[in-house]
Image (cartoon, rainbow, N blue to C red; front, top):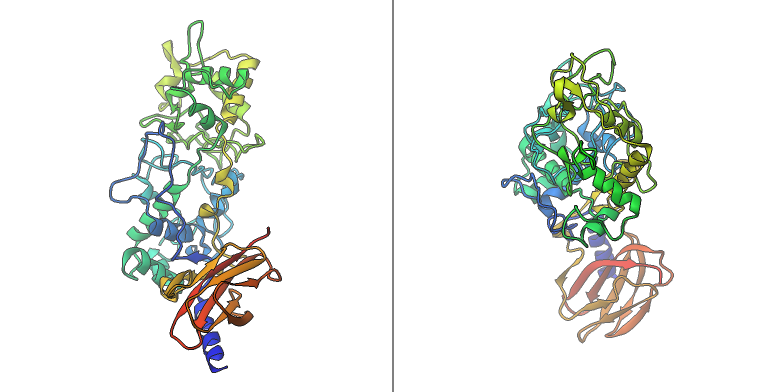
Length: 468
């Protein structure tokens, strides 16, 4: 009985730390693969994706405590269900004000040659970009202007949040929190977000290049691909999309100028010539063909057809002194592609093939916080999910449905199963190769512990209960 009480107390301490981020069993960010035909990558040598860094980045990305009033996280404007974009034309900041521009989708941000970020490319790299929204007066509020606190106040705030010193120690070997460390972790997480399971990717994997028909495409999809890749002009002229958004990455080419949409998002009478960046064209729509948010920096265009109509007839107004030359024709006129209705529909069909499925639901990019904004950590020091001193103790199967079997050395043992909240659910003596019924447990995650009655052998790990 004394040993049982001691065990319960030990588990109580352990379980306090057990919840959403498991530092023992990290999600694999660094081991993700991508197709061999994807060759562009803007990851700097001094900040490669690591499992530890991206895990911290995930927490930072979803944490509303990084805003002044604990209401806005990066994920508010970059939502997983919309390929990390926003369906609002302008996103809402911490105090209810609207952002100056539409929030750019983050899907495949890593896979391109362009190093600069934001629509106007004011950030020299992704690392530099990540903390600018935090320090924006409208977005998250630590601007050090207009009476706002500065970033030093945020860092002090984070030092007092229980999980941040622990996570920074885990990632960087020190509890010290700095802007550079925040930037590195956020950039690693954002670069880890990828989508390569589309119909396009299935077809591209079966051929030598984009220039041949994909065997899994319909006739109209292959025609849309041809139009996308082909330069304008001539008898077989195309839409010229490839010139700025090159397949197979579909990233924006460096050094492009603006695309002819120059109205400000807040006031259409105000001209803004600085928007020369664009997100990847992958996952511009979801699997049902619904846009993952409006298009362009001002959200002016609401459908793929409107986007194609814009490029079909570019207006080269005198006020736009920064129009990309690829959109101009002799005499300074804007391009006129003269696309037919069928050709426009073919382009739309092709663009829809760039949409995947995994990005919208994969846990590695999901919110680790609960509905109340709480987060707890399973630290390495707890011994959960690992053998502290196991001898020859084995529990199988795991995951299990109705029964588990315990393989033990000689001796007498207790088998205890706890909820993640530390409540003892089952306890009994156990013998070697003895089968135990767990069918009454609901599907979920539990803490299983085997303890020697007459030895110091003890074994603690997570038990996964699943349906048959």
